[in-house]
Image (tube, rainbow, N blue to C red):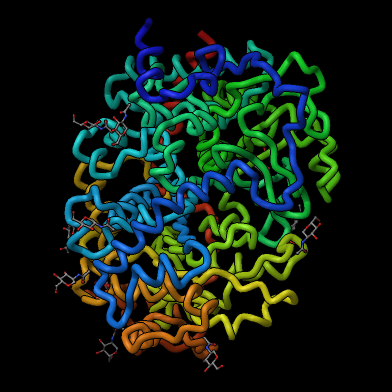
Length: 637
Ligand SMILES: *[C@@H]1O[C@H](CO)[C@@H](O)[C@H](O)[C@H]1NC(C)=O
Ligand SMILES: *[C@@H]1O[C@H](CO)[C@@H](O)[C@H](O)[C@H]1NC(C)=O
Ligand SMILES: *[C@@H]1O[C@H](CO)[C@@H](O)[C@H](O)[C@H]1NC(C)=O
Ligand SMILES: *[C@@H]1O[C@H](CO)[C@@H](O)[C@H](O)[C@H]1NC(C)=O
Ligand SMILES: *[C@@H]1O[C@H](CO)[C@@H](O)[C@H](O)[C@H]1NC(C)=O
Ligand SMILES: *[C@@H]1O[C@H](CO)[C@@H](O)[C@H](O)[C@H]1NC(C)=O
Ligand SMILES: *[C@@H]1O[C@H](CO)[C@@H](O)[C@H](O)[C@H]1NC(C)=O
Ligand SMILES: *[C@@H]1O[C@H](CO)[C@@H](O)[C@H](O)[C@H]1NC(C)=O
Ligand SMILES: *[C@@H]1O[C@H](CO)[C@@H](O)[C@H](O)[C@H]1NC(C)=O
Ligand SMILES: *[C@@H]1O[C@H](CO)[C@@H](O)[C@H](O)[C@H]1NC(C)=O
Ligand SMILES: *[C@@H]1O[C@H](CO)[C@@H](O)[C@H](O)[C@H]1NC(C)=O
Ligand SMILES: *[C@@H]1O[C@H](CO)[C@@H](O)[C@H](O)[C@H]1NC(C)=O
């Protein structure tokens, strides 16, 4: 047995079938499902695989939730009785991590580590173990780099990653991982280039996202042979940590977009990728396909040739790259860099060679939804190619849509927002506003989301400075939607500085060890209210939010403690005066609040969108150009 087979056998006891059959980045033939069964289904509910998985997961989350609620020191509340006797179903907790490059990955890592009892200090700070009570875990772009890294590495912990120091080595940019060692960098790009050739030679289109996904894999999957070249997203089904339900159900969010078009929240098709399926609930598609068979030629879900199915297309790095294609924006800006002459031509030719389509698009060809009979939008299902882009391109930078599907019965979402909305790269609630508005569009399709204010109010009322609960009272939410679908309660927690200025640029590509740990530590403090120093009862208050929908369903009134918590953390529906100058609210006080509020007057100017592109400075550019030149040299050598 070779090394690669040994490692696979150790990690995946059940089966190795989900790895790419070619043992390389190239997809290859696998057996079609028995009786040529359809690989596609109408999005009329959660899949039977997910339903049975979640049912088993609840056997773990129920007990973990009781432990969490007991440790949170809630008063006048019998956690064990409530969870095991009072409720008629398990509470579904979901945790969502926004995009925003490495800033989002690292802040998200700190925030998640606060919920993870494997983190040193997490139990003392009140939230340790909450992730064990969580059912769903969503990630988008940089947030998904964090989720995907943990999920695909045997649900390792952030603590483990920091202690071992191999994964997430960000000292050098992924564009030039060799640092000053140009040969190391060149051989790195040669490997990536070879992987792309493998896929192309096997008859598949490659786009820039393939190169991007392979580069990301060198930072996330270095415990695997050839940096996870053959590691697929669907492999997770067979991993013990997933199949024994000891981690939450991970979902990646990405958007559909045809080249040359633009999308906003109300007309985007939001895609999700779970270990089982890729697809969308939105009426424009309303279908899901088995993710393991991506690359197979299908017609309304049936393999066109029942003896020619394909596996290995759903490469884990490729899926993670798909959710984060905004990074390709760097390269789209090539002609604004001032490069001219032969160097420009070389780079340009290489890029054209990699992708004839827009560069910020991941190419899924053949289109797995070809002629899907469930889809409302002909342009998606008549095309031979499916195009997916960064999940934040429709401004919904926090991946909430999968969690708003009524079929999932989510009770509470912890929404971690590490977006760069303001000029200083802090969040301002823009993502929640986009998600709120979307429910009223045709694509909303019966989903609901609590009322939220505009971005100015988020800043001026300190809603980004400390955790804020939205949708506290379901009685106030019945008019959102004709069917009276009650949305989850949303606990919004935005990036802000405690021990570290964690508002690094989305396009910052390298972090020293100190910077990396500084951002992660700050994320921990964001989630724990600065290690409970700002509110000793924070864990109990979060507990009050977690049990709220269950109490409402059973007509149970809140304890005095929970009423106090809700008056502290719930948005009360008030709005800031229209002439408030939120541009003054650029600093934070040591207690976490937005400073300058008392002096704020004038007109508002915060309109930056969650997904807006900002560039990080010239040194980044030099690196990009250097690498593109390297690539060009390799490909022409
Ligand atoms: C995966 O993690 C579990 C729990 O931490 C551990 O028992 C197991 O040995 C790990 N598997 C591998 C292959 O590292
Ligand atoms: C909060 O706790 C974490 C984890 O123990 C620790 O790393 C961090 O330094 C603490 N921060 C403060 C401000 O005490
Ligand atoms: C709960 O109370 C105990 C005893 O007073 C205390 O040690 C612990 O830190 C408290 N836990 C939280 C999360 O506040
Ligand atoms: C977290 O770990 C502490 C200390 O080991 C333990 O007391 C607590 O019950 C754990 N919390 C959860 C929610 O499992
Ligand atoms: C980190 O190192 C420890 C001890 O060597 C090992 O048990 C663990 O599996 C490693 N974790 C990762 C993610 O490499
Ligand atoms: C989505 O809406 C935006 C803004 O109205 C518009 O520019 C764009 O063309 C629309 N895209 C699609 C795919 O309909
Ligand atoms: C860059 O190129 C794109 C397409 O090739 C073009 O639309 C755009 O105007 C160019 N920008 C500049 C600054 O030349
Ligand atoms: C959602 O969209 C599907 C497909 O268009 C439709 O059949 C269904 O009735 C819609 N659901 C709601 C609640 O509008
Ligand atoms: C927000 O925080 C600032 C700084 O502490 C404070 O002056 C202001 O009153 C707060 N705003 C609200 C609405 O609480
Ligand atoms: C919810 O409704 C109650 C009265 O029904 C009202 O007092 C309260 O302010 C409302 N809360 C919000 C957030 O709108
Ligand atoms: C924010 O803080 C910086 C540095 O402390 C200071 O120069 C600036 O005036 C502050 N801005 C506002 C609006 O208070
Ligand atoms: C608000 O203005 C007063 C008077 O000019 C000044 O003393 C105070 O520092 C200002 N506060 C902030 C947060 O900028």
